[in-house]
Every structure is written in structure tokens, then in C-alpha cells.
Image (tube, rainbow, N blue to C red; front, side, top):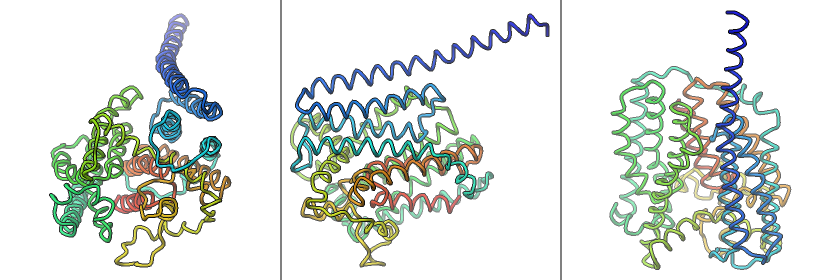
Length: 460
């Protein structure tokens, strides 16, 4: 090739790179403009009742937008832990506080404007410590020491494994329905059932959701080796009705997030624009489950839109609980100094086996604040659980720990990018992350999620 041709080829390559950079910068600029516009609208509506709180919310939003821009401009991986953490922060700690400031109903019985500001400062501390833990240079060395499953999956073993897990799920669902009075009675009393009927058979309730695991295993196998989708469709036909009938939106979201992550890494890479389109039908399903569950109380009132809004806000109470904890600790609620951490190990054990097992910290806090055994229905949030355990030191430690674990998981994915087992485990970590963020590191959902993680790690 002549020198002229080499120069032309180099110039063409530079133009292609510049064009690619512009293509990535355009959605980043749109994202920043949309975020700033939405924040400005919220601040304007909130008014000047609590300018300090509004300023802190603006600071949290600035952290989120800066992180989003960095992700979009770098590689656009929307399932990287910083991207997920940024999205969760925006939903739980920007939208929800602005809604409360604008008069949205909240479970907090009493709080001051100072409590609101302290809670938001704790959010900033938790977020900063998460990113500090994430960027510590420890993730890759730790990931390199972790075991990894075989990269070769036989078709027979995969299908038999999926069938066995699906059968286990169906058997658990049948036994569970026998205990609670049948499917029709369960569906007509879903709200009472989720909170009370499943007591004593929670292990069967959780095992019933494992049909989603069978689907996920087949989905990963189908994406990687382009095999026939017929077994996948058959598994979906059996497992999806069970997942929807459980009435627990968190269990449904776990498998949906995993499916999206698998599609992103094994199929076609998702941009944030396409992901936003997929979120719409998921929100509809999410709201439908919540509305039906509230409808079974017999006390549902108002228009469909009002019930949808209530169902959505009921799922975003992590900041409400953080606010309640700030108001009550340590004046009414003592610091626990890790007393409930062992419950993380004992929680998955059925009470029929271990009747005197330690309650979760969420159960303790809900009972103390509301005077009744509400279980983990109102999640404490990551900074809230850290604060109850060890004050601001706990908030920082919980954020650092989750950031470090997230970086290790992401480095594990990149080290074994072509190993289906590693991709599958990282997809589960994506689903775990929202549970840790919303409820803390030792709550019941977190403990049960880790059981799923250990189960999946064992079978692959």
C-alpha cells in the first residue's frame, strides 16, 4: 500500500472514530438535559419549604448524571454496577424525596425538615462510599481467585437440570397451595396471604419461584448456542403463571432483570434507549400485581390511576424508612452493632427446622417503629440498615462493602467473558444488587437471594 493510500485509510479511521464519539455524546447530552429538566421541575414544584433538602437532592442528582455521562461516553454498559446503582439512586433517592416534599403520602409518622436533610446526607455518604469501594484496585485480584464453572454445557445435562428445577418448583407450589387453602382462595386473599398465610411455609413459597431459575438456565443456553427455543417456551408457559400468582413483585423482578442482563451480554447489547422502552411494559405488570394485591384487601378506593400511583409509591418506601430511622435512632431505637448479622445465615432455614432462629433486623425495626410484626415488607434501605447497625460508620461500611463486592463481580464477568457460567452468575448479581440497595445487606430478601445465588453456583 502506498503512503497516500495509508494516509487516506488513517484519515477515514479517524473520521469513523469521531463519528462514533458524536453518536455516543448525543444520547449522553439528551440524558443530561432530561435529568436536569426533570429535576428542575421537581424543585420548582417543591418550592422553598425546605431549600436545604432540595439542594441536597440536586447534589445527588448531579452525582447520578455525572456517573451516567461517564458510562455512556466510555462503553455504554448499562448493566455495569455503577450504572445500576445510579439508576436505583435516581428512583429511590431523587424521585421519592421530591414526591414526599410535594405532599405524597408516606409511612413516616413524624419527621422534621432536619431529619430529611440528615437522611439525604446519609444517601450522599452511602453513594460516595459505594463508588469508593468500587474503584478500589481490589476487584480484579479477588475475582481471579474465585472458582469458575465449566465453559462446556452438554445439552442433555442442561435440559435435565432445568426439568428437575422446574419439577421442584411445581411440587413446592402444589404443597404450598394445599397448605393455604388452594389457588382460588390464595388469589382472592393475596394481600393477606403474602403477609400472613405463608407463615410457616415460607420455604415452599420461595422454592415455588425457582421455576424462574429453570427458565433462566435454558434462556442462557439458548442464547449462547442458538438451540431450539421450544423447551424454553414450554418452561415459560409453566413457570410464568406461578411467578405472577405468588403476588411478590420482587421475585418476578429478579428473574426479569437476569433475563435482560443475559440478553445484553449473550445476545444483542442493549442501549439505554432500548432498555427504557422495555421498562414500560414491565412497570405495567409490576403495577398490575400490586393493584390486584391491594384489591384483595377489600379496602381499595379511588380511580385506577390513583391505585396505580399508590402501588408504585408503596414499592419505593426505602427512603421513607430511612427517614423514619433517622428520626427514631438513637432516641427510640438503639444502635444494634451487628446483633442481627447472623440472621443472614439462619434466615433461609425454615422455622420448622430452627424454631428459635434470630429475626432479621428489618423485622425488629418494623415491629419497634410500627408496634406490629410487619416482617420485611418495609425495606430499610442500604444506608438505613447501616445506620441502625453502627450509625454513620455503618452507612459508610455498608456502601464500601457493596461497592467492593460489585467491582469483584464485574471483574469476574470480564475475566471469564466467554464462560457461560460466569455470565449467568453475573446476571444473578445484577438482580441481587437491587435487593441489597433497597433492603440492605442482611434483610430477608437479601438472604434468600444469596440462597438462589448459591443454588445456581452449585448447579452450574
